[in-house]
Amino acid sequence: MKKAIITVVGKDSVGILAKTCTYLASEKINILDISQTVVQDYFNMMMIADYSKSKTPFVEIASCLTKLGSNMGMEIRCQKSEIFEKMHRV
Amino acid sequence: MINISEVLETNRWILAENLDVRTITMGVSLLDCASSDLTETCKKIEEKLLRLAKDLVKTGDDIGREFGVPVINKRLSVTPIAIVGSACCKKPRDFVKIAKTLDKVASKLKVNFIGGYSAIVSKGMTKADELLIRSIPEALAVTSRICSSVNVGSTKTGIDMDAIRLMGEIVKETAKKTASQDSLGCAKLVVLCNAPDDNPFMAGAFHGVSEADAVINVGVSGPGVVNHVLKEIRGESFEVLCETIKRTAFKITRIGQLVAQEAAKRLGVPFGIIDLSLAPTPAIGDSVADILREIGLEHPGAPGTTAALALLNDQVKKGGVMASSYVGGLSGAFIPVSEDQGMIDAVNAGALTIEKLEAMTCVCSVGLDMIAIPGDTTASTISGIIADEAAIGMVNQKTTAVRIIPVVGKKEGDSVEFGGLLGHAPVMGVSRFSCEKMISRSGRIPAPIHSFKN
Image (cartoon, rainbow over all chains, first blue to last red; front, top):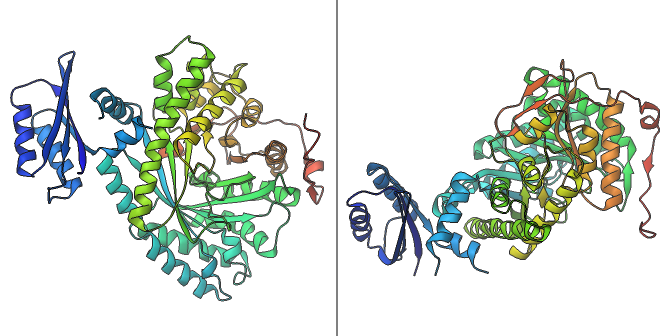
């Protein structure tokens, strides 16, 4: 399994999750976990997803998600999970 | 499993507090490029660097995008050129030809700097060492991506005062040759004592002869992050302060470790070391001076500064050592003036002088760094400043360095602009008392005694 962490940050609006998930499904990226918080009207969502079945290079997936986010006025980042695991787990 | 608050913390550090991987530096040995023919040596150097480092920039950028952490600089460090060129360079001009070759390669590969236009003369200079040193002003004037360093002493060998006398003149000449750019050449020239072989940071990076054929060294930075976390524990005890710095340094170093391992794997080159240095940039908030202020000083330079810096430097090392098996290079806190807005403010406020900076270098990771001084400062005074720093390094078994810029045509209180990461600086005053008679003595200072430590 190859895990990616996708974060979506911005003003809450209708359809954010739907659009993001539709794109991920089209790339055969499986969502393993979703968590979210809303801080001062700002929507913070994190997905853990498995991209091992996707044929698209990771950098391209990340930049497509960033574009998708900016079309919705949101900031979407897609990062390989190792950066967080290394930093927060001994 | 990773939780959302951990993810948000990491991304906040990256996006708001300037956490980045400052440099992936590929060290390359050029010993096998040496020959008695200058043209052939240059050809071999070009071939080897283009072969080994062709994917360096792309790999760094890819890793940055995949993990979502900026990899700011991609650089090369090479075997000290005084050694590589010793058989084929008969005049300083011959060494300049190698410098031009290195500059051309750096530009082709799109690396922003190449370090190693260096000579290691801790105990004495060979003919080639001296020729290289004499070629530095011209080499730095006709190239844009070359960094030069000269190691003039070590704890084991003592200090080569002949080299220091020469370096005073070379620094002056470099300033003159690049006078039209506010003497920018001197920003790419550093004089060291106890220089490490594996430092990925410029201007002092070179690939020591004790190293393998090629290695990947990574420099991580994050003064903004440390400053941010300290704001949350304002007024707490030293124990909490130290623990917080250590934890933060640990997390930052782990990112460096990940990036270094990935880069090494993708480039097929062994991983060397992580250098965790709090390296400030002129960006607001990305400042070591701000950390010192957050610890509780009105300005760096106030009484207590040396103690605060000692504490900071030590905790950074302790956190870093736990996070990676191979911590090396300089690892600690850098205290450049022009590259740190907080330091510039302290100088402008009258809180920070060269003498206090010298005291701070006893406990920081390097030395007098990026300090602009009046253009009419004499060569012997510059040599005296270098000798003082080298003595601190030699006696305390640590790396020390001097990177000062006697800006042609400027006097104390003026300001100079170097641009980019090199920043801008107020011209600082230096002592008007002479050390000329001492500097004009020939020979070297013997190595210090290693017992009777007091």
